[in-house]
Image (cartoon, rainbow, N blue to C red; front, side):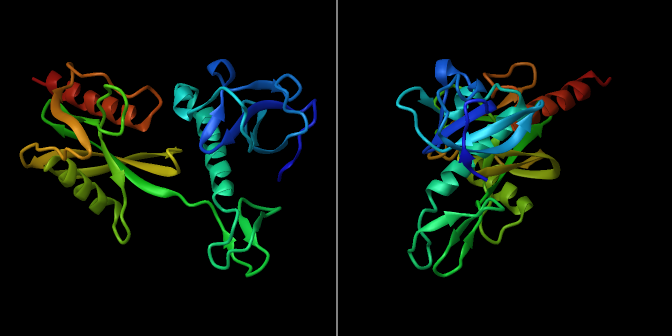
Length: 259
């Protein structure tokens, strides 16, 4: 529940507005509210990291507002809480008015929800399910440079799950659409909340089945089969994409070592 922040309140501070966060000197603020001139702001504790509370304050600072991607190398647990804060702030900002009757809404005092006092509708934060998959072909892994990425990173294929689709169907469709490749032996690995803007990534590994690599130029800049010991620039550590790549490389290396 939100309340007025006092000068002695302390912890990690997620100051967020329009999917941006306040990063003075490029870092997530830590310490007392007085130190960061946050006294008097309205905030709520959204979690705890190593014994210290993590606060969300829904406001913009005049400068040093940046993308959460700038702190993607934070420890995964803290990064996940920051992502939670950014998503909650955007949810509240985008639900000021009821989508059914148009009246102004207010925050629930007991849960993460927006309530309409007129028609009694209740809205919860929406999460978009996504799949992400590493595909192995003998001693190689399929990596692609995505059009939406502003760097030279190569990563595995991913995409949103469509209405009425299973996760397995989403993997098959996305891989076919983006690379013209079919996969087999699909295995679930793990999941990761991904605040870009409000996704839950469900990660898989798969083996190449058939098809010649042909990319969708609207989604991908480039893609190729890379040998496990000759990889291009990869996603940062701590991302589920990097874990999938490393797990696939371990499989390739083990198979290569067999007589």
